[in-house]
Length: 494
Image 1 (cartoon, rainbow, N blue to C red):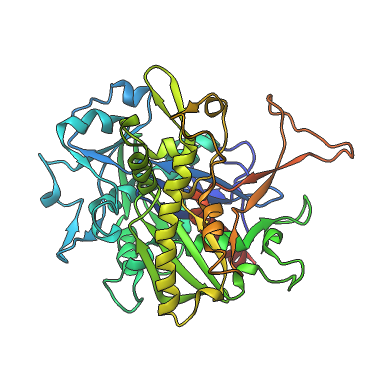
Image 2 (cartoon, helix red, strand yellow):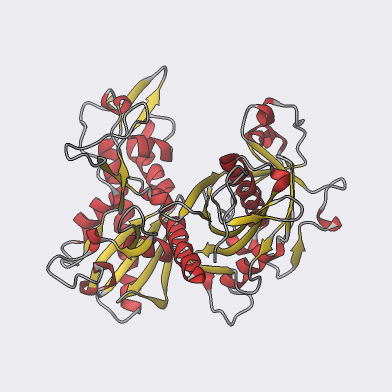
């Protein structure tokens, strides 16, 4: 039987209890982790006593760190900005197969192993003490930045729950039921191999047995409900596929959340109990900033050892657009691709639509070549592809804004055109070769519509008005993990 924090106590309604030390103990907490090249993302899953039964806290964190910082804790970056400072805890196996203990005396500089993240990092960049994102130069499971990112995640889990539910940090204790992480398919490897990516990341997470934060002040032991089975690592891309197939639904206001098929991906002329993603061959295109992972699924299951990692991504699109634009602008960034324009001088905005479509088409055609190789190595043909699911931060769709509407053509020869998403370009470029393939649009959630003051809007029938909100492609993988964790917690409480 689930116990809940009683009313008139911090954290009231969450699954947990008050212990003999008067601490608030949360005992059904899940954590989904996605350590990316551009940022770190996490979702905290909290069991509670609301009709839906769960609350979710999304966390987005920087993944660049600086060491031996000279920025004092009284600096505005700490007092008014968003910065963290902590002592590193945890172990990893470096590329030379040497185990590095980041909390040991051998790892310290000047007797301390203190790292900063957030606003203070830009202040420290000139001093040359910056640690680059995990996966930018080495495998994520073989680099110290992954350990630092995990320290930051665990610290921010405590911090965000404390802020969300007004639980004093000193009085908060978390017992993790499930922690789920991801590694790129090329790093994943076999479970039997102790040096496979899934085992290396599992060991890194397990090695962080406590956190020691200076700002905010957090010193906690990391506790698991079942230490031997709480941590699982999966391939990147697979959770995004799971999230596209399944959503969390509720029969009525008094029913618990259930994991059900997303109706938008059920063929109305086919099996009503099966997603089109589970029929035939499905390609997951997980586009990041610098790389794109391709993962092959067949009849709803991962095809083992059939994956590729391609050095093309959102950053590559930006580079190709810069080449196409030439000397007309000094620099093109991924943000310019997302915004659709570039700014020159004082607020002079220029449209990039034609160049963005061309740059994305070049990248997509390179990915299609690699899909050919992936399909062929699995003994299949391109005709066997039924669905292509495009996810990841490099696939963020364009949304027009007033600033974009005011942007002028960059040259007289090229005017504004519709900016196509990566998925739309995939559909255009592959339809002749794979006529049965359908490129999947991002899943959507139905949210209650509110006015500018936050008040719920109602339809003529008296029911709350609903709006469709498209899922952020950057959150697909970690949201898929969170959905699976929700299902596991529900099952464990039956």
